[in-house]
Image 1 (tube, rainbow, N blue to C red):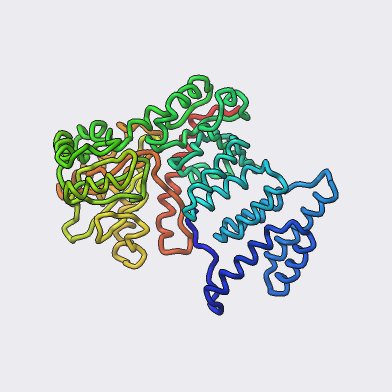
Image 2 (cartoon, rainbow, N blue to C red):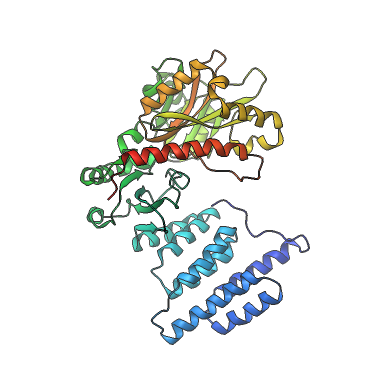
Length: 461
């Protein structure tokens, strides 16, 4: 999660807020039921009914454990921790989770969320340790609720990011999501899964999926249910494979891209390597298995590129940069989502900077930007032209993904210039009362299309 930490109260200093948060975190970790009752009284006196309820739940839970009650369990206390987690009060949530694990060391979800808390804070070693503990305890997580009419097995990679953001696509009111951390599971566990109607491979990042190729293929070979986004379709979307995959399509352009595992021994060797692959300066460098501009830099010289490669160890993608500014001086990045190979508009980001992301494009501060986005969402053919729409249709068919997407721009001559096209594309609802609420109708069309696809593919047991 990337939510803000504990909010600053306008009548208190930042130091007071931090001190209070530390006090609350310390109180949450207490094993003394009496201390929690006292804290509940303090919270109630301060008008914090939710905080009071949290400490009362802790007191009742600790009493049940102390009395040896057969009903003793830490599930309600884990819900308290998750409430703080969802609010963004991560350090307080961490202390509650730690109390949960003192009572029930096998509560995997507590370990999962502790891993997320530490990862969000940049504490990678702690995050890794909690993640390892979580998935060694449990590999299958069932999200059941009344009224669900379909069971979907979601294949996930737990060791790293790279999963398709499937929560919007698989609403819990309709779908019982059975999340399976397959990178931690032994082959024998495939035969012990609860019944499911179809499988969604949510490991959408090809750099994450590649090391799991044999494991995923063994699962697919023994799976008797329909599988959406099979591995072979994911693998073809690696950044360095896109030029060959899409470059021969009419009215489609893709920049040359090279994946390297380590820097050539000299700057001259680096320059020669790029030339061999048709890549000229300036060059974009980015770490493998990253999105959202993470680690992405524009290098103007071979020396700068060599230095960047030395700074970041591991596989890197090197891509020829193209200045794609529109005539008005702005950079535009369109996103369309493919559901069953059909393109649906999702958003348009307009920025004064070449690295365009919706959250940095300041869309909400400029009415003209939102108006242009609305026109694109309402009628993409009118916004892009029939030539570009035909090209996008061809891209969707060539990708052959059940769910995927494309980030691209429209060149002056009407051709489509592809930034990336893969299965990890995010689509989510916006606040119904916010400036971006106009996007929700487009999101709903995407969700409805995916629902139709699942209905067609699923074999309901």
